[in-house]
Amino acid sequence: MKFSVTTNDAISARCDCLVIAVHDNGRLSACASKADRASKGLVTRLLKQKDISAKPGSTLMVPAPQEMAASRLLLVGLGDKPDVDDFAAAAAAAARSLCRSPTRKAVITLAEIAVANCDPRARARLVVEALAVAAYRFDQLKSSNNKNDKSGLVRVTLTARTTAATAARRGVGEAQAIANGVHLARDLGNLPGNICTPSYLARRARQLGRSHGLRVSVLDEARMKALKMGALLSVSRGSREPARLIVMEHRGGKRGEAPVVLVGKGLTFDAGGISLKPAASMDEMKYDMCGGASVFGALLAAAELKLPLNVVGIVPSSENLPDGAANKPGDIVTSMSGKTIEILNTDAEGRLILCDALSYAERYKPDTVIDIATLTGACVIALGQPATGLFVNQDGLAKELLSAGDEARDRAWQLPLWKTYQKQLKSPFADIGNIGGRSAGAITAACFLSRFTEGMRWAHLDIAGTAWKSGAGKGATGRPVPLLCRFLINRAGAR
Ligand code: BES
Ligand code: MN
Ligand code: ZN
Image 1 (tube, protein in one colour):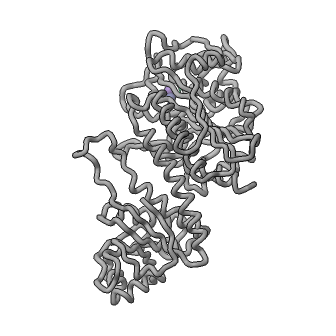
Image 2 (cartoon, rainbow, N blue to C red; image 1 turned 60 degrees about the horizontal axis):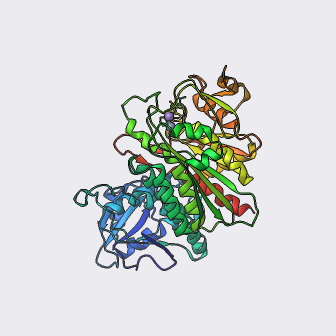
Image 3 (cartoon, protein in one colour; image 1 turned 120 degrees about the vertical axis):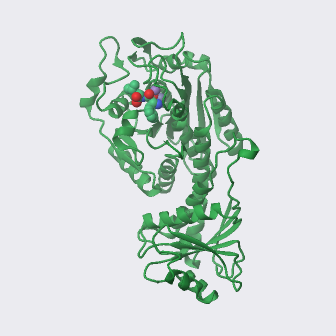
């Protein structure tokens, strides 16, 4: 799908579908009233007949009258005084309708409409994001006669007032890069565990390096052993697929400038190990690499946007399976940091691979480290699907991430990292246990990680509830790529 911005008159545009907004109480947007005139009152008539309501999110596609250059009109309800939520709902509904129709070339006027607290750049971004989400399909593993209907949309033109065109173009560019990152994260997440293995992720990283100018290196198990990554290696020992530690670097900032390091959990399948998970929905544990996938997505977007920042992505990747060589409850391993860990539950494996990756991150002398992980079922219970769990050891960073999430409509909510929770991790035999009991499970998991990030400006994002959807529309969401991208863009802009 190709996007562009024009300041030309939309009404005379030759296209398969012209998208215009209608408001409550018969008021027509500037475009709608032009279209109304051009169509001898068709728009007013449709509203009057209640063929379309002006509720945000309602849509009606009709053949355009002969007088117009467009073949179809898509009317989109936008309420009375639309806020950002109304606008996003309208954009999403318009995008769905367009993607279901035979439209190949669309002209969309929605971004011209004034929205409270939402500038032309943000409006353009929302329209592009909505289209990217609606057009996404994952059918690469279906044979050709079973593929889902692909959207035919190939060219989308957004109209903008002359004074807003530059801002709208920036919004389109940003949204396209972010959408590409989201798309990559969703594809990697949706791939099954027998295809998307640690070595597969490493290959994809190398490809990304070649196509987008990232510096990529991959550590194999021998290197990890030399680095004494005993926690990470103890997890992969129970699997036939060798672990990988993938490092991708975007060097857009000054030489020597301290990087932002993103560390993503890349568990390509989590059966729980000897503490085996129940069978129901175990297939969903192929998504346990979505934190890693979001690091791929964020680095892709950073590279496409040529952000003037140094960003390092680290993805520790392994499977967690039961096997004769697997971790057993009670086993004690030594992490790269030197801390010993008593593994009381082999299903709390994410923190085991992450702690060594976080220790490895230290060598980049990071300005900020953010880890992203489908870490705990407890976080799903606490926050559900709307919000990612956020844990931070520095207030300024919490603010930056929370507002990045708000701006990107990919929200996070902060949970406490108070010292009092740390005692739940006490072990009688090792420096630390890998679980903290039933209560406050998302918090004690974060506490565990905090023991390996002392001295770094660090945040942990628990995306167990946000990275994928269950049920009929099952699939990876690409979250929190939008949040991460907004965080990076804001940082790049701040300097
Ligand atoms: N990958 C899971 C977390 C998870 C569970 C994500 C359900 C999404 C949905 C993680 O490795 C895990 O198994 N965590 C355990 C930790 C427990 C043993 C302390 C959990 O949450 O049950
Ligand atoms: Mn697990
Ligand atoms: Zn896991």
